[in-house]
Length: 131
Image (cartoon, one colour):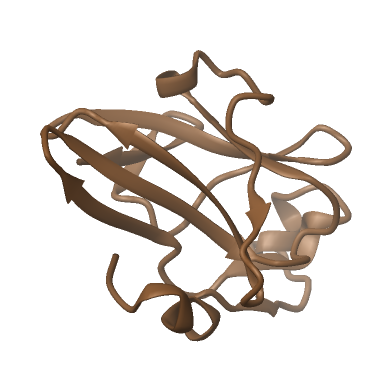
């Protein structure tokens, strides 16, 4: 994983954007209406026949528990909760087959779903990652 734990704090920042007619606030429900990830939060590492993917977010943005949910865990919110890493971030790590593509989203407290703008692409309403 490029940068390791010390690089996560710098690489995983959030910023607030003002409301606007076509801005993020128009598309995301409160309290996530002004939450935007600014830099990459997906870390990949090849481990033998699997690709380890770390889904990383800032510690308290958004507030409350967050899980990464996707086709790799049958969209089960309990399968991969993001856990505090002690460095200003929280993360969940998933081992995936190499050369594959997966749809995912984040699920925050209050049933707030959001995508990862640094993902490799979009698949309908979902983020998409390629290993």
